Image (cartoon, rainbow, N blue to C red):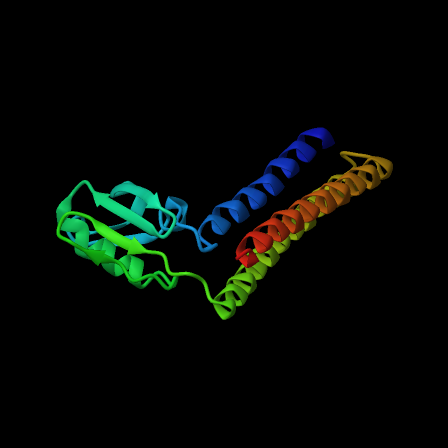
Length: 187
């Protein structure tokens, strides 16, 4: 019984790591990459809904300082332009009526430091999610022991495994954040 819960625990903690990786693709490193803007939410007036940019067209990086968005429906050009401007990424796109060009400016030292702070917040959010999962599963094992579904020794072993999984996942978060920080600060 406890093994099933421990598998679920691993899956829940892995989800927190994957969410962190997705969030980090949106943090600029000074190089153009489609991942930088693919998750920007675009409010499309024509469709009356909000959708990620990757669902509205092709995103290409023809050189290290430029992204080009080629929308499938040209009527969404203005919506895409507005969404990229208001995304908080500090980008100023231009449209030529066919595509949206997004020049990627070189990062200043101050901007790099700001990006590292944003990265730190994302990493801390991931740690908080992982600790929340730990708390949830510790409660489950305590409840199972209180209801006599498992012994106290099984509960203690399960809680110890939960802590080991927590430590392992927090270490992964730290490694991912350190790697991304190095990438951001690289000139």
